[in-house]
Amino acid sequence: FGSSLIVSFVFLFANIGTHVYHRVCLALVFAMAPSAEMSQEEAQKQYTAASNELEDIIRSSQCVIFSTTWCPYCDKAAAFFKNLNRQCRKVDLDEGGEHNPYLGFVLGMATQQRTVPNIFLHQKHVGGFDRLLYLQEQCKDTKSSIFTNHNDVCSFITQE
Image (cartoon, rainbow, N blue to C red; front, side, top):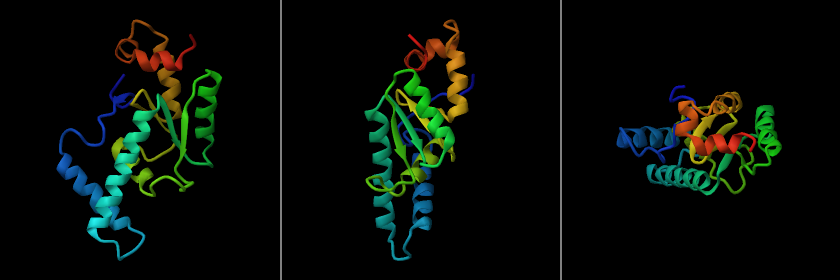
């Protein structure tokens, strides 16, 4: 089991290279700006707002699925939790509406995952649906380091 399956989510760039990482992210937001008239200050505000929104979403729910409305594996992930009688918040990134338009971009930068579903359990990044199934299988071994180190996640995704 490597750090690629479950990585404790250190909220938005709190460790190594934060200044460099923020500058790269900000430069990308600025480059992706829908309007050539967006200033660097406005790009910084958009990036900060999206980062704060991402942090708030992840902190406020035990389970979050970042998804799109057309993704079949997102639906499978939602059904997985429903079958376990677990509530899981689903955030559709393609619906816009109440969410910052840069939320998906910031999510991708934070997790280094550019696909959906992008799943978090107990503020820990799991990954996609295939990783969720693999994790569930690994959690069945109560002697494993996964079970020991991530008991909160294992308890959430296994039948009690």
